[in-house]
Image (cartoon, rainbow, N blue to C red):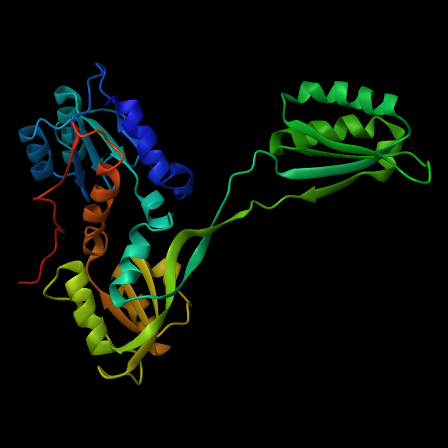
Length: 347
């Protein structure tokens, strides 16, 4: 299968438009000589051990949940470990793709998988994802006749296609024509300048800011109202099993015990404090929070379970492997890394 075809499948499973604006997602390394993709390796982090695994498997594409290239770089040298890995990928002709927060946000993605560890419930998105919109403003105005509409729209063509006429309706009282158009941020100022040169529009001009539409089910973090409430102790055991861990870290909320009931749980994979902050829930589940963020949560009566960063994400790779494999030809093998692991462990 060609790389571009695999990328199309990945986009269908989790559109990159769902990623956070600060993130660096998508195809990060593209080989200069195209070759069929026969083996895909899934990993949470691209480390030297994972790269060795990829080379041993003659891997053609590495899907690394965390982007190995994040900040801008000015050179590719051997002294930096991430740059070494990039060089090795280029030399081996291995493509690298990172989905990161697009997997967090998508419905059925990492956060839905994480919150599902405590059982079924009514699940809500904590930070709603919004759809894309090419036009950001709606401009309404009045003109005297159709000829004036045509003249204005001819002048608008100079706005590089940033405007679209929605409708022009004759007023029933014969006082003129009501016109509405939408325009992009870049086209707003020149559009208004054009309208101000015409008497009728300049006297009736109104500008509305358009909001991006919400995408139900997509966004960062999840809040679940559990169908079957559990105790804190049971929640710990369920999450150990779900994440495949023998140890978790727990901070009991003020006034709570291991036998306290958990009816609502808020989760955010990875480092979730910014998404979970202020959310009213009996329990928070995330990978990591700072000391003071944990104290803040506990003070408001919310217990906190921490698994360490990538342990809250890694289990989703097996879920995604199944979803990806069924969409690829039989000749393409999708493998979950056996050496990828969180750098921290309990000793």
